[in-house]
Image (cartoon, rainbow, N blue to C red):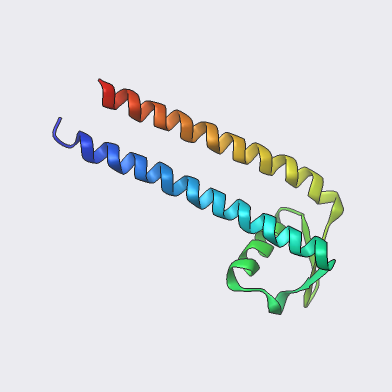
Length: 109
């Protein structure tokens, strides 16, 4: 099969890029939550574009409460969010591991 090496390389690159994107998202969430815990509330105008996007995703998840100019931690949503985030990270790692095993099996045949 002539395109097998290219398909394998493409698969491995796709797996790596997906893992990097997920790790980056989890790290941005962690950093913003730490900032919120330290300051109690954050000014939405002082956030960078990435932080605003992360704040919006945290608001949609029920972790962040926003008024016109400030964002606050929503304690009730934080516990459920932590469990979901850990489940998301573990599931993603297992899927990536499974895909790597599949690619390795295909390569060894």
